[in-house]
Image (tube, rainbow, N blue to C red):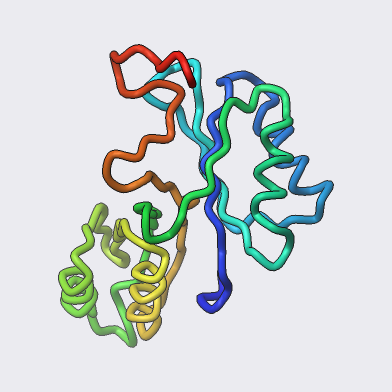
Length: 183
């Protein structure tokens, strides 16, 4: 994703049922909205999944997208996350060649992992696999730092996000608490 592009993050609570993701992605496809990142997982309630979608603002007003999503079957709640009021994270695995021109560069790669405070999760004879978690900008910077070495493979998750502080995007107040009557 281009770093100068303004994006929006949507947090969508849906019933944990087959076909829901297809309907959500289908809405984006029908409206020609691009999905930059998509992550899905269960929530504190096993009957509810959270879909986190990152899209760019130039395609349509985010409010319009949110309203269209809310009309879909099995969509329970849609929330637009404001960047400075939410924590965004991705996870990335990077496999890097540890040999250049017959010379072991493993110490240099490990120095980079220490600089970025990321973990080495696998060491093989000719490669090292690094796990990094953070904002997309941190992951991009790590990739740039590793470019002088031969990157063999990169795998990135979609962005996940959660509101900061006491703001909760949930159908209930908290785990084990009863929902408000007004909700």
